[in-house]
Length: 74
Image (cartoon, helix red, strand yellow):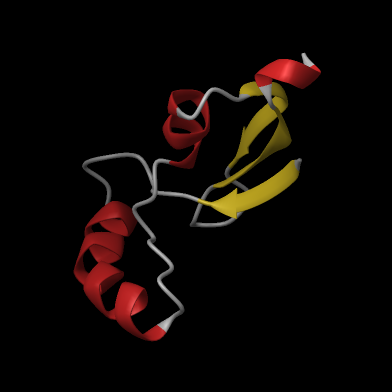
């Protein structure tokens, strides 16, 4: 499964503080979107292997991209 997901900014940054303030509103009014999501950790905890994983910070809000592979596909 290919993915591209916006994720939490680095802790102790202004962007992370803003994400923390906006998270409750985002989860409620933006279809459950969590700007503080720890997507990489969730994939790994669910048994996926990540390939071609990249964290990109060419915007103020970082993005992660890659390929999540289930154990039976590895």
